[in-house]
Image (cartoon, rainbow, N blue to C red; front, side):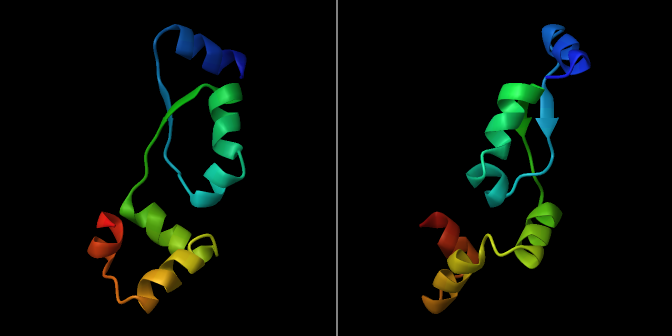
Amino acid sequence: MTETLKQLTDLGVSVWLDDLSRSRITSGNLQSLIDNKSVRGVTTNPTIFAGALANADDYSDAVASCSSRDLTPKRAFLK
């Protein structure tokens, strides 16, 4: 963790990451940011998620599976 982030954390500031992706989780990068960079929370938004769907293969299998079963996005998330 950088000294500045450590100081902020020690003062009660929670560092949040505004960029979540499946690869960030599965690669261990998110855990590394938590362990070494003082990240305490994660957020995302529809634009970031749309970019992840459009620009990476991380979700291809899951999207194809939902599509082959005629699952709408709402039904897929409720499963």
